Every structure is written in structure tokens, then in C-alpha cells.
Image (spheres, rainbow, N blue to C red):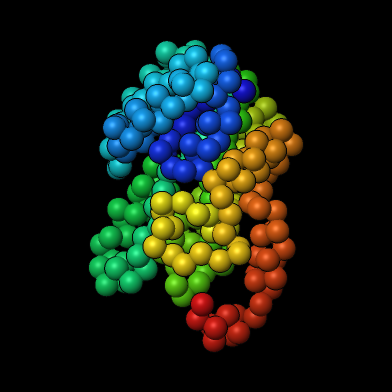
Length: 244
């Protein structure tokens, strides 16, 4: 896969994935909210051997700017082999409960923008007859938890969206939902780390493996599949009592 379109290209996981794919001939179209940070990412990919790394700043909630950036990317590059959506943030649950108005801003950037971009890309992939779509979800979307149910709700919405998009695009174009456990990134810098935290590089490896296998849903690292399987079968009364 040489031509890669990325939404949320400044995320630590997206950067780790792109660095691994920055081989001779690789062309990147990097979209995100901060142009200065996007250019740092682009320069790094070029230094690693990429043939091109263009950047486009996207204003969250501005569909026109998103559509323009996606369509320009296809016009300049001709085609993309892969679309990676890694945009998102980890909101404060307490702040969202105290000010529900913050919810729409978070959902816009962490779910709606991603869905809109994926639909734009889906039209292009249908036209070209191939192309993989990879969307970054989270284990938090598997079950609501007292401490992060706003974040989990956005990730759960992405999973439902991916399920339908997969039915639309496959078998020509795989739609892969990657569900990491907690990852040591700037987004989680304020959280106390433990043995369950992974690294962006390990998630990037899981993404590459999922693409090769045309997997539908991938937990990263793999053991989160079994952890979440156990969590999902816990009785609701017990989960409510835990208030975790």
C-alpha cells in the first residue's frame, strides 16, 4: 500500500503507522486540526524516505473543508490504497457531565467527522474498485463504564457505523475496526500507567497485520479480545456496583 490518506495524522498511533509505511514510493495525504503539527509529521515521513507527504488542515465540524481536502487528495494522487481514521480525543467525563454542551463538540471530532470522511472515501473506493478503510475505535466502546461512558459512546457509534459500511464495501474494500486498549500517548499523559498500557508502535503493527488478513475487528494488543469478552458477560448489576 503506497498511497495513504490519513485523518487525524498527528495522533501518536497514526504517526507510528505512517513511519512504518514511509518506504520509497509511499505517498501520504495527511489531514488534521493543527497545520504546524501536520507539517512536522510530513517532514519526518519525507526524511524516512516517503515520496510525498502533503498536509491539509481540517476545521472540526466544517464538512466543506473536510470534503475539499478529501477530494483534493484523490485529485492530486489519483487514488488511495488505504484510508486511516485516527482522529479523536479523550474528554473529561466530569466536565461533560457538568456541561453537556461539550458533548456535541467531542462527538463531532471523534465520531461525526470520521463517519463523514469515511463516506466520502467510500464513494471513491467504490469507483476505483478497491482500497482498505481502517478506523480506530477503542475497547471502551464495548461496554459503558461510569468513568468514561461519553468517550465509550463515541467509539460504540463508530463500531455500528463500521459494521454497516463493511456490508456496503466488501468484498472489494475491507473495512477494519481497530480497538486498542489503553495506549501510552499524549492523550493519556494524565492517566496513571499500568501493565495493560500498550505503545503506539504495537498498535501500528496490529493495524498492518489486520490489513494483510483483511480482518473485520481487531483488538490491540490481541489479549484485549479476551479481557473484553469477560467484561461483556458480567451481569449488569455487578457492573453497576463496581462503578469502574
